[in-house]
Image (cartoon, helix red, strand yellow):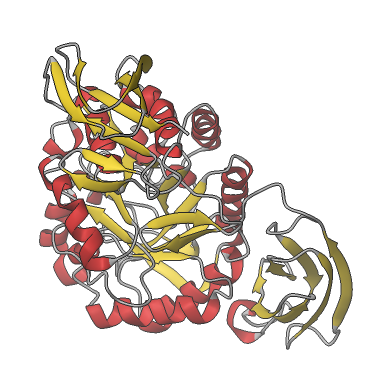
Length: 489
């Protein structure tokens, strides 16, 4: 197998009692460059699995043991060179793959695409395959919110929900107010017994994303719920986190997002989030990316367990100007996972124009962050929630943005409003956003620079020649124009 891919062992074991909590599966994997102890999990029907991600080329040995079986499983396997770049890591303000290659993140959000019927899931994968997106945010648990009133195709636990026909008429805000402390408790779930079919489907979806080179930014908790998953007892939360880390840590494309809009969850405290982070770190032997997403109030992103800032900004465009300040405060990658969405729905956060969405994506990059998209056209299946097909215009232009981002070999370094350079100073960009000057005066100093004028909407790059000294660069009177300069060698 290749380095950084998933090595999986499947073993038969005990079925009596409750195998999810009664038995343990442990494995020791050792190669020339590493030794790791990992936990396995029960996958139903007497089947236990353990997964491992090797980080070195060569021969590995394994020893799998535990109360799940009287047998001890031992063996070897060979690891060859990787064709992928490995997992993403934080390096100062930058995101880099494990092999050192810069990772320029172009994200999107499809909260519950993995819980939709098979046809929608297939459409989602096909759409992603033909897009520039290389990260997608989504939930493990189903979601109850505006435009999200359908039940998932299956549930993550054994048990049965109540008849939700009456509940469906409430919005999230109304539901929380009307039902209050009864929130979710009317559902009859056994939180000690997972539904393996639910997670097997998630296995497939994460692997498909991995094959496409797309990071799976997994949201572990969220407050939008009518089934009781946002208000489980502490022991169930811990069991759940240990189960999903055992199941998914070996995928190199996995990120952990503790919550979507953590500050809207009335049943969890900062102490809970800190406890969850500790559980994840203790049970993820590979150290995947970790963060937590806000609605209004920022989490304390200076916490040591947080690898990057996962930020939502309600006012979108204006607040993106704070990215250089956040870089200095947190000294970590700034990922803007939500800055309003392209669409036409009633809510203000989901009705900005394609031009505005594209401008916010470019602004985020030029200010030194990593941008995230979403789309909310009022169709039967809304991309932001269900996935399926994209109907907007902005996403078609993200490949052009990604090509420009790659020229900087890391995050752009902001040096003035809408003006950035590469870390080595050999590439510079001026972005016009909503401004429409017919020229811009630029002082290139004594060095020679090749200058290009970019139309970010039309995705054109026009070479204007070689410049030195103080120069006047003519521009069309149009929004979304940029000037890119590369130093002559």
